[in-house]
Length: 282
Image 1 (cartoon, helix red, strand yellow):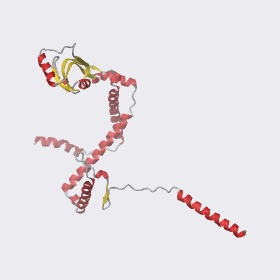
Image 2 (cartoon, one colour):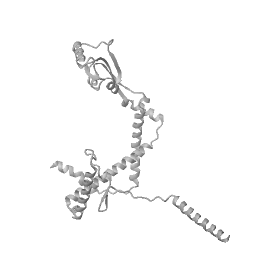
Image 3 (cartoon, rainbow, N blue to C red):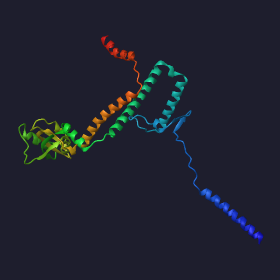
Image 4 (cartoon, helix red, strand yellow):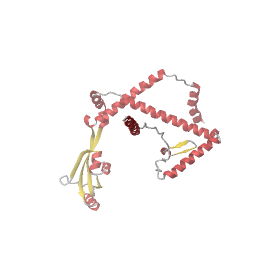
């Protein structure tokens, strides 16, 4: 009996050990971080996909060929540095210009980002927008046109009708379709932008439209009238927000200027100011 009990105890221990092992196998393994890799590397210098993209005029059609080009560029760059070609005056000047242009481009991008953040933070009320609209409503005025038109199946028929009317003839309003008063975009959709070139009432144009042809006659050009506030509210808000952001941005720059350490070489500045005058006198 004792042997049997001991055997049972050993069997239970073995099963427990197996169970623990299986539980460990089923437990999730900690995630391992994999460093981002490029497409290739040349002596430790990585080449990623962005370096294969050519200019907009030459899309990435052959990645293998462009990888060869990128590898050749890396090799040539390293060899040029090995030969100290960066010390040549012409090369050094070119590289310096590239760096200065890159710094300036970065500064301009960050300046624009700061202005955008100032602009987006401007708070505007409905009263602000309506007051700005009243002051600037002429900006939102839009000229309108009125036309008459007749539709024809062919260009020949339209031109024949135009010739029959002659210089002094007019389309019969009772048998023609009226267009307008309509703004330029509406006219272009209804017929053709070409008719907006007509200047005097009675002038006509034959245009293709919707698979047919139209004989379009100018009736009148109406004075520009301001659009209602609600129709131009987004434009009014954009205009006022930009104006206030410009003032706030200037104030912010003045605040930064006041707290910054700025040093100006007066002699160098005067030399720059005098240089154009000297070259002009020569």
